[in-house]
Image 1 (cartoon, helix red, strand yellow):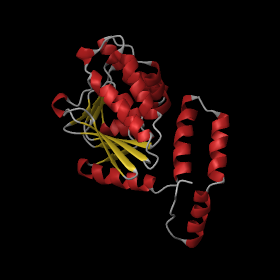
Image 2 (cartoon, helix red, strand yellow; image 1 turned 90 degrees about the vertical axis):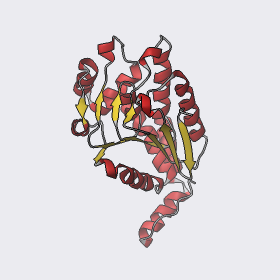
Image 3 (cartoon, helix red, strand yellow; image 1 turned 180 degrees about the vertical axis):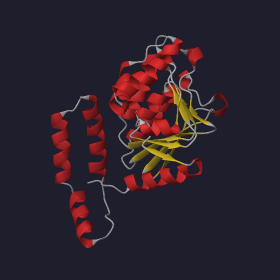
Length: 248
């Protein structure tokens, strides 16, 4: 009963880590479960926002160190990549400490909302573990080279204010305000035009990786330009009313 749980309610899906007694560390079977949940969400066109949350005092302590073998870093990297490439816009709700590989799961999300009092550290160098390629790429593209080196090479532990200052957190609020902040951002995102929202999310991530597909980008721009949603958005703007988007 402690495997990650998926809940879908209209345009919003929530993935919840449920191993609070072990700081929500991830076991080998969890990687497959989470990957399956992401695939399920990707197949549900009505889902526009995917939230990654957890229970207890910690967000996640990464992969179970005692279970690491040569295959596991690749499996964990594949999961983080799948989260980054998920079709919906993704939010990480960080109510507690973010450690090890969990730092990359958070960086793979489009938004990272944190509660005051949380902390972060990446102990790979201290363990003798070389971090995987896309994880380092996310560190550099999200935080910049100097901060990526600082966190990955020194295993320095930093607090919530510093996490916000270096760009790890996109939002920082009081612990009691985290749920409301997440709900407000979720509602704002879910109210956007799906073709433009999801298209820009996808291509912004590709641009950040230096992997932009110019043909696919132009196709998505043209699709949105020819959409009924654009006409609805323009009409709603002129009429000073809320738009009613259909995703077409």
